Length: 135
Image (tube, rainbow, N blue to C red; front, side, top):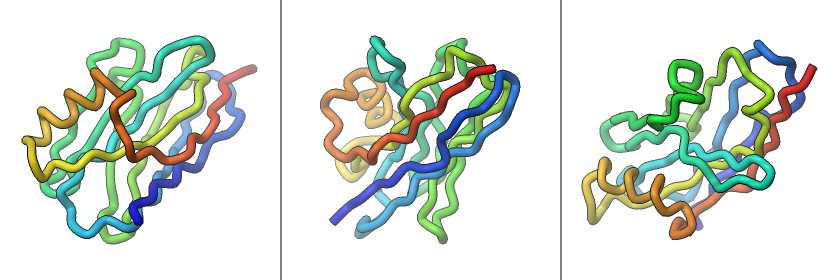
């Protein structure tokens, strides 16, 4: 059974950095794209960044709100996905989720594009981890 488990959230101050982790288990191959999303209260779920496990391609959100501050990486040996966040701001307060889609049938770029456009169609989600940025 494929499972994703996000962790690492907490209360931080503006300007702080934080690393989130997503533990990945149950995948039978590496033909998956795994992505980070967040959802702030009253807002739609927003795609942040994704990585293709097979070849390490990284796909980042074009959102100006996180550009240059958030970065994704993975440790395939440890089956972990990371989201490194720097210079955190109050507007980064949200529940952060990891999600996965198979890339067996489509190019990873197309898969990730679809994930970001229609997160409501993603089936594989980890439970979220809350990040609160407050002074």
